[in-house]
Image (cartoon, rainbow, N blue to C red):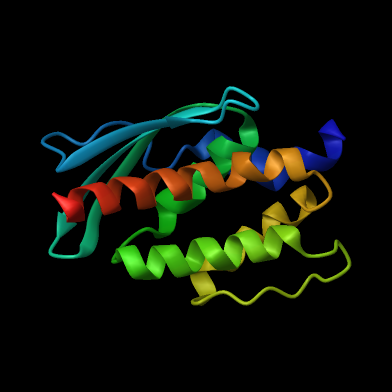
Length: 147
């Protein structure tokens, strides 16, 4: 299971840690954790109106969560609460598909990199590791938009 889940591409994204760190004078920050495995991520955001202008994270988590946060760090630009919510729904749908059903529908070509997480489909307990950074970002955006 370990070698199946932690493929080179996933480990590369985790090691790159794109957007890792803090944002000085962030509009909001939020820490969330996955009690099932102990993953913990803190996200920092700056908005321009309803669009995400800056995003960063600090993850103390498994390689799946770190890779997911790094991939999100590469492509977060211009996300809105609605577009992020739709993306999360597609990601969760992708993770719940049968392993043989490799075709995913992403809203933009840049999100096709999320296909690296197809290996998690048969490991339901690890799917939250992948979705945690996205869920944390959505929760942070929701909180700031409600204040």
